[in-house]
Image (cartoon, rainbow, N blue to C red; front, side, top):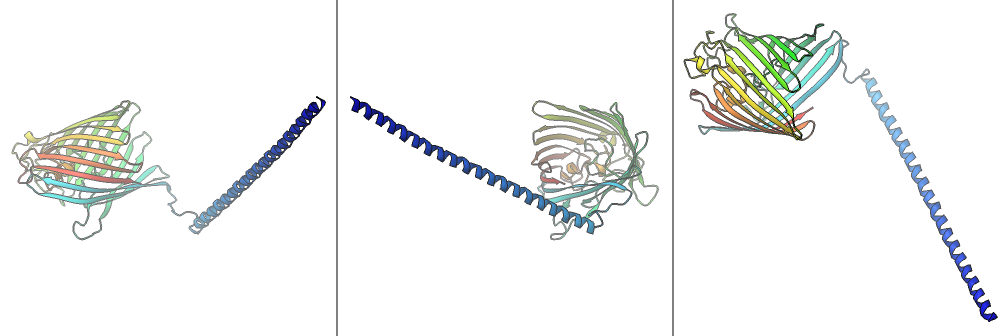
Length: 416
């Protein structure tokens, strides 16, 4: 019995000894792992510190090089005149594929481009100056340059698009002198969006939402005082977040061209004295924003024959009107416009060129009506693509030109 107890005690002691030995080994391994982890963390911190020092040294080197370059250029890469407060440069490039089909079987497809570059700066006396250059020919209603139109790979012309000086008086009135962007709110049909009037404009807007625009412009210089054409325009309106409304009157004192196909009787009987009204409504839903707009124009001075109208009674062809809508969802914008522009409604040389080119070779949209459907996708902040379909027809016999036409356009537009 005693021997059995001694044997049990000896076995228990042996087990305890073995357990103590295993625990000691485990403790040693754990300590080694902890020590290795600490060494790894120390190494990582050392590497991060070295990277920080390296980046700071690289940044310091680049900064020194830039400062050295600026010093070599007398402190500035671009030197402005001492009287200039700041300078803003912006522009865009539009590349277009266009396919036009007339009802007489003729068609034309072509690639075109428009490049615009604008400069705007202020001086210390409170004047704003702006100068813009653009591709295209002398036409006021088109800034497009057609690829290889007259010669293989010919270079596009570059012309002055606008050049103006603008000043805000103490009473808030804005005075603009020179060639400027159109100061009159409109739907873009009786006034082509490329039009840049030349003359003087007065504008002002009030906290109540009311605004006005007055202008006196030189429309055409025909070499004789008796046939030079000037324009006096006036517009009053109201604008807030949801509505824009305006009424306008445009008085041309003489025919604006010696071409009767553009304006009418070159003796001046068919002067344009147009009254127009514009209305646009803006709104938002949970899914999209929208705009609904319309404009109506009547030429009160239509008192002479007009070859473009195809009628000896111009009073029958003195109206123009536009209805349109657009909706914007996320990066997409869908637009629809229907325009009806009779032969004596306005000065044909100034109206939207897109509709007129759909049925004739002249750049005017008198005596034409049609549908315009456009879809735009904004790829990024500065880049968008646009597709447009124009379906147009002549209101009266277009004098041997194609009476119906369709235009398909695909645009890539990059702003900078």
